[in-house]
Image 1: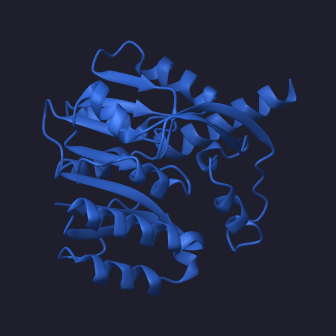
Image 2: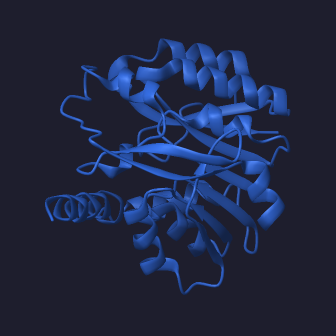
Length: 247
């Protein structure tokens, strides 16, 4: 009973953060309009409570929403289950298909993760105090390639999987026109691995957004080396953001 109440409280916390700011939605629409046109297919990997799904649907895109947390899958189905242009995949994403253990942060489900290294990096890190991954559940695991085989090749893909981004990209062999992946300053090595994987897939131009600003840091898109150097120079207080890559 206590777990259920904590889970509900955690979900409402996320709903308040991601849907409660009236400026958040229009800012996302302006950002994603650069990559997505009506009718396009988009993958939202790590959908959480679906605020990005909402943005992509406002742009009239078709969306594959990927989320492994059982309680958040129920939330997504409540919000988008009747939308024929949203397919919900209740699975984690990695380099191979199977199953994986997911560590749940019930009070703050946005940082639930399949990465033990992510949890270790967060321990005692500034800005991460008090986080608790006290519950574990086994969930299905699939690959980006398998998603493409099932749904088609998207024009844009957002990856936000709490330290498991490099593993997700390792299961992708066909590039899409543009993608984004989350980075954190507690795991810059994961971001560097993601950049290297993007280069191997053929991506040449990179940019970044800090936090939930929805604004690019660089006026001009950067090559991989310049973006990596910018990332290395970030102060720890920057905490997190998203790297964008395009072919």
